[in-house]
Length: 106
Image (cartoon, rainbow, N blue to C red):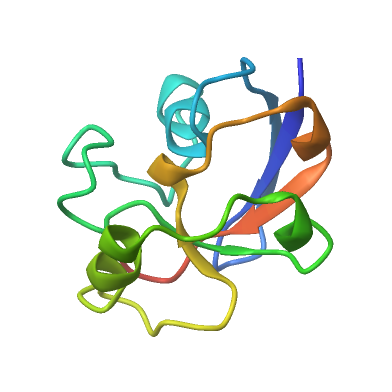
């Protein structure tokens, strides 16, 4: 099972095993990781699962869908080059060891 490290805006770090095929958001919600809300349940409608993906993991991600790109414009925290919605990242074996950082607000 791939593990994902979630680092909060305060620097608190938590690594959890996430089932292959689940989203990074689902892994956070199922493991009570602070900083990822997922208010819409992963339906690409709220941007409350915004994360900053560490550079080492970016090449392993699928390209951003236009709907995700548009939704990131309404995120509460500033968008960065490595911003993604964690509900749109389905965990695969190559994501093992990936780190995402949560913004100060969702």
